Each structure stands twice: as C-alpha cells, then as structure tokens.
Length: 372
Image (tube, rainbow, N blue to C red; front, side, top):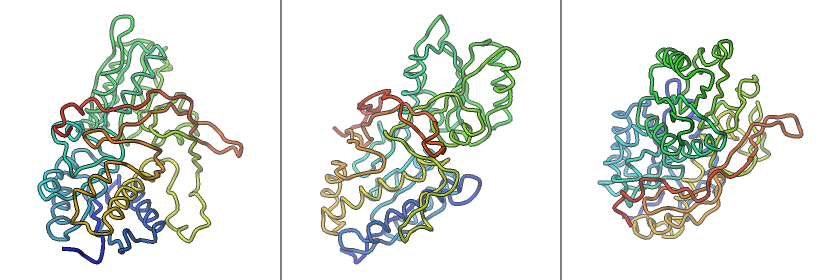
C-alpha cells in the first residue's frame, strides 16, 4: 500500500561513551535531509531514531520494532558489526532494505549477503588490507596487532594479516585483548619478545594507546603507531604523537579544524561535526543519496522493491565519500588512499592524500555470496 510519507528507521548508538559517534551520524543524516528539502520522490521524509546502546540484543529489538511496528521502508545506520549481525535476519526476512553506513562484517559480504542489504562503507577487512600493503612497502618486519575482541576487530586483524608479508623470518605478532587493562601487559610482553623492531597497528579502539608503547622508546625500541582509521589521528598529531600516515578510502584533502565548521546555510546548528571524527560525521550522507535515488526512480512508490534494488545497485549519485561501484554482494568496490596529517596554508591540521595504495579493491569474501 502506498503511503504519503517515506519512512526511514535509523539505528545507532545514542547513549553511553560511544554516543558521540551516533550523535555525529544523526546530525549528518539530518543535514543531508535538509539539503533535499526533507523530501524524496515528492514525499515528505519521516525518520525514526532508535538507540542500540551498543548492544546486539537491543539493536535487534529496535530493528524489529522499526520493521514490524513502525513499518519503515528503509533502515539505516549501524556502527557496530555485532549489532548489525544480530539485526540482519529480521530485515532480510521482511524484505526491508537495510543500508549500513559503517559496519561491514565479513559474513555480510559472504554467505549472509542479501538482495535487501547494502553497504555504503566497506567490508571490515579492506582498510586493514591496505595498511598491510603499506607496511610491506615500508619494510615492516614485525608487528603487534591490537583490536577489540568482537566481529569487526577480528575482521580487521585478519585483513592486515592476509596482506602483510613475512620479511626476515617472522611475519609478526598477533594479539586481541579486551578490556583495556589487558592491552598494556600484552604490548609490554610483545616489546620484550620483538625487540627494537616492534611496530604497532591499532585497530578500532576508543581507549588510549597503552603506556608501554610509549615507554618502549626509553627501553631502546622506537615503535611506530599505524592506525587503520583516522579517528583522533588529528588530535594525536597536534600533540606530536603521530608520526605515520594511514589508509583511507576517500581521495582529497579534508580540512580538520578544532572548532565546528562554519556554514552560511540555515542549517548551521547541524553543521559538520568535530573534525576528529570526519568519517562518522559524513557516513550517513551516502545512504541518504542511495535511498533518494531509489525513491525517485519509482516516483515514491516504495512497493516496487525490485526497481528500487536495481537503482541502488547502480550507485548512480554523487557522494561525499567519492565514487564507487557495487560488487555482486552489495559491498563497495573502491580505491584506498594513503593520507597524512599536515598543516594547510592557514596553519590548520588537514588530511592530505599522499598516494593510492590500491585501486578498485573488492572484498575477499564476495565469491562466497550466492548473489551473482
């Protein structure tokens, strides 16, 4: 049955320590809708936001509510891979389009792929794979990998290991440690074992880097910190703590200022959030564009699911994340770039693209997806 509105459910984390990410995403999505006049296909857009509390069971319940009670046409959001995996079946069974703005678990790219599920970010392994290639180019001989012990962290560590070559014997040291109190002991032990050639790749963590990494410099080691994602990388550079470039999936220079970006538009209150979190602040804009392209294609008739799916598969829209195309599993095929933190002409910290690490990267699980 055709409705007078386009209903979108948005599941993210709006409470607790990581609410800063969810709030950025909500602000971004609201700003993106403002740019469309809050209409798609000539119909007003209604958005229902739900807080998953960073808990898979809660995320699943909120997804069920949005689909079964609120009868949304689309669901967007999902920061955490374990929350997305818990919520996936309900959306697929009910044939409700789900677009992940961030989470990219390997299962979603492989055996759990679905015609009704799209990603506008990546498969979790892809950026770490680019990091592995970069470290090969730098001649890194040993590495201690740190990441959270859950779906995304495991994917990321597996991703860098899959592309990091062995040099001079041992390929590296592998470790997953949570909570944070265990990380310091793990890194300290790795330093003693690896000696002066220890390098650290930090996966997706929101706690400070363990003190033994810094203390290693006083013990004769000079560990380099390589981060897969650039959250807080600008703040670290400002304090003189970051010395390495990192992979990113978007080309171009992104200026990061310590204050909120000023805007001359009427949406100043929802202007681009803090520069230390540039990706999460922008990530929901692409799902908005994807949904809008589908709704416009069917002239607002969201019952035409096959036509909407076909339009979304084209990725035929402009996006702040740069151009991309979809693989058979609805995961983006995209370039990954080496970026560094530099000062611009105004003395402000910016992210500068240094080189292209890999072109047209397709995730390594797409051949396990039954969609062809």
